Image (spheres, rainbow, N blue to C red):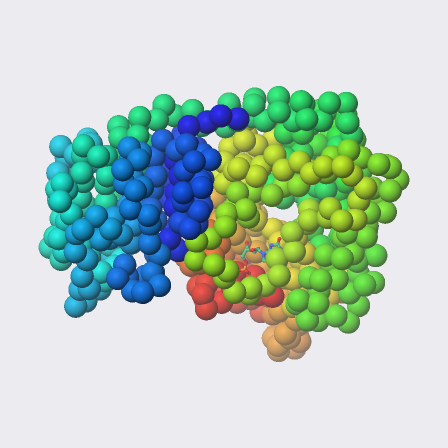
Length: 510
Ligand code: XMP
């Protein structure tokens, strides 16, 4: 697939994926690579433009990430953001200094709208600043194209060399018209034509898959999540009944979910195997209460079940995995700490006899996967399904798991989801679910004492699930949810709403 490409060089900033997504929202394909690989990637990918991301360092620190100076003479347009802007200034002979105080938050900014970067924008608007260092003196050949009270060089350009630097963060939504700035960069400055759309992607991907697969047999582990469902739809369109999907129902799905998945694929002309493995999983988890041990057991058992089913099919030629782009981006800043071992249902290659792996979503961000799903005509409720952890409700029953606890949780979670949808909040809250805490407390119902479970409700808003805020669900909606659950689900007598952000908490409780 030959698309025009913008190369994002990662200097360790926290918004790097967001930058890439913004570029793609402008219908321009874009990849993120560590700054260290810049030279090789430029040669390999022949980019229309390059974006330097922000990063946590100061340019004059000894070990700070640097860039080879000749990059500015290649004739490829470059946009430096935050650290990337400082690095551009510093490398080209400007001066970068440390401010007395950090400039942070929403900031009034004045723009020179004669600059192509700010073409068509208002002359004054709000930007999102987050920096201590700043460009004190611009390099020769540059001019200032934006400023704020605290920051004399909020943006700079060398128009003839097509080099641009921005101190603020156009990629975050707090910056007015940020998208338009990316749009201007890729179209007005880099000259891209906008050849990245999901309609085109679907056509090319289907043709590529057909080419590759020929008359071979394809196997896919379907979890019912967005990624594996869209991968299945794509493969179904490409190779029809050469595809077999194995859907392992581990018994930790939400209410009705297993049946919904089966129904959604009923008319796609593929071979569909549903394995009802609830008892098998439950027996492995008897008296297991440690979250990581649960994850491990479920991950292993999943592979065993899948393997048993796959053996019945015999040798297959291709195994499909629903890997998406955020999983393959290699960070410029090195490895982050592992907080939870996120077992992704789908990581199975060692155990099944196959020749090759197909990863048809490898280039796509989550929102693009959804667009592709819609393009392919997949059911809405699958495309817009909120993220659901591989181990499912097994990590939403705190501590040891029983069928009874799972059923209680399923019923309560169903009511919660139904009322959030009734309140019209099902797309604005990015993930919401109930947790059965396994803590019991005293209550009074009718005239009697109860000693039943406490249920926790969690709802978060987030862009990347790395950080999250708790959702501000109105009290009257919470009240309705609470009274319905207490009345309709037995063995719950107390409901709490989780008001922690991530960090310090995580989204799931286990
Ligand atoms: P945490 O709890 O780490 O969750 O803040 C971040 C996102 O990851 C999901 N999650 C998982 N997904 N297997 C998965 O496939 C797991 O074991 C797992 N644990 C958490 C979680 O639902 C949230 O969207």
